[in-house]
Image 1 (cartoon, one colour):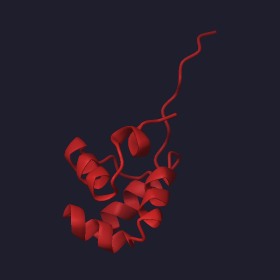
Image 2 (cartoon, rainbow, N blue to C red; image 1 turned 90 degrees about the vertical axis):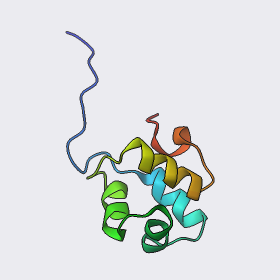
Image 3 (spheres, rainbow, N blue to C red; image 1 turned 30 degrees about the vertical axis):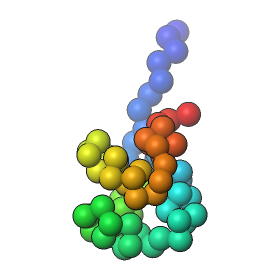
Length: 76
């Protein structure tokens, strides 16, 4: 038997770290979306694990939240 890490289905890999970082900065989804140039729905989908953002968007989100890619987007 091999020990292969299986991928997550849509919605199973919620980005709780993003939501927590956003809340700690006292930003709504709409406010963060405005800062990074996307819609509120896009931020909601990322937090719900239903959208994989581009690296460019990931960097913009991290800059807006004063955090790093490792802190928000890297899996433990």
